[in-house]
Amino acid sequence: MAKGKAVPLWLSVLKEVAKDPDVAEQLKDVSFSLVIVFTDQDNESLSLVIDKGKQTSQEGEIPNCVAKVSFGSEVFEGLVTEKLSPMKAIQKRMLEIDGDLAALLNLVYLLPAMKKNYEKITAE
Amino acid sequence: MKDKYDAVVVGGGLGGLLAGGMLAKKGLETLIVEKNPFLGGRCRTIEWGGFRADIGPKVHTAYFNDPKDTWFYQALQMLGLDLDLHIVDWHIVSVNKKGEDKPRYDPFDPRLGSQAFIDFFAIMTGCNFNEKQKAELKRVLVEMGTVSEETCKEFLNTAFDGWSKNNVGDAVVRTFFQGTTILAGVDVQEYPTGHMVGAMGAIHKGSFNFAYPIGSVLMDSLIGPLEKACEQFGCDIVKGMSVRRICTEHKQANGAWLRDNKTDMLYKVSAPVVVSAVPLYTARGAFLEDDDFTESELRFVEMTVKGKQDDYVGFYYLKEEVVPPNFPAWTHIFDFTTGGPVYRGDLYIPLGAHPAIGATGPKGKQLVLTYMIGGPEGPFNEDFPDYETVRKEEKEFEDLVEIALPGFKKAIEHQGHVLSENWGRFCYLMHDPNDTVDVKSKAVKGLYFAGDSPFVLGSLLGMEKCGRVAIECSDAILRDRGKN
Image (cartoon, rainbow over all chains, first blue to last red):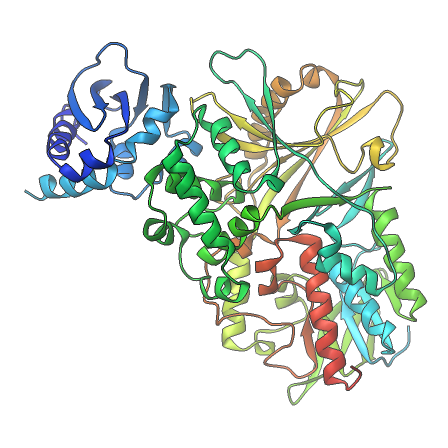
């Protein structure tokens, strides 16, 4: 992915996911915060906060996130499009996690909705 | 060796010895032919640096609650042998965990059923499943536990990846299930649902256990007594001879050409029954031609070739005792350097050289074995990895062992390693359940298979598979010969 493109793309995907009532319902008991760093994008990052189903995301690193995950943008794309399983990405050391692994695992609840919106946005 | 027998068994490994012994016991004049100067195949004991250690499938792997309930145990009983099998205690060692300066050891006890999974998840992630996730995990395991072996076989060509997406409701639980395929060295997109469901169902029932024979190394406790039992039943065993070709006439087996590996002399042995008790991919091209298989069987053979990968076993001769007496016998090493659990391989304080099982070695010295899995998730994805790759991986692995066992590297006096063909991993690969090699050849009358077969599905690998296939194979032969 060209430099400078990953963060805006994924923020727009997450913005759409935040509007999805099914995702909110599924995550109603879940709270976590996560910083996602794209190592192939000059370490540009975005932050994602889920607070009992309510999702917010923004560019950059917000303080006190429980976990930070770093990977190439193609790895994140692989996870979202289900071409790559999260456990395989960990096993193959394609990503680095600093902090609470549970936050990364909770991210899998968002992946189906992210995939749907990613495909919609990239098709446009 | 005579020139005429009722049955010729090609291969003096565990499967060949068990099958040959059973045929001889039932009165068939039987010859077992082994190409090596020793019996046991990969189930063998080596002598190294004064130690006697078991390599290959030294651990009895099967789904059982009591080792006496296994096919392997039954097969031995049929030959009058009583092996003392003890369930192996597993441990997980976590190294390089952030905030922990020491390695952490946790037991993994499959006899706990679904609770073993819940505990494993907590060790791997540092967090617990919530109640909803626990309920979903248990629901799926219960469902898996009710699936019959026959149904599992029907799902050999369905990837677990797809099945889990449709059948596991919670995404985290699904991810966890999918991640467990890594322990088998196979990607979830290639892992057959049938095998996964069988294995997970066994865990749910607390019957996913491993055992090893106590008393002595395998050569003394198993292979030697088995050889004697075969001979007592009148079975002839020749070592150091290869079967060059099975003989057939109008698609009926009638014997085999043998070659003495020392003199190159050829011998013809007549027999209406020939049993191939070696891995299929070895048999094909060595003494069986493509014509000896149906097209469907050949597809299965091709699949076994695809599944064959090198695994690495490192032998470390330690000049001083760095392994505490209560150190777990078998540990899986997970490296957390990158934050998540990366399965790197196993560390044996070798079951085969542990004084507790009666093995011997020089006083004050110790033998440690390491195991790195090959296959798609391991370091040796090519058939013949170059030596530099092996050494690089070996060095990295030694660093991890040093963390788990402080003082290990300094104590190494000398070391060796074996790159072992993992002949059983094919059972973890998807294939059409109709393309199977049964114990009885569909192409050649009188030809039987006591080596690899789809029976591994319900039996995991190694000894259990050998026991089951030997029983099924000898039953089929005796039935066909009117001896049952």
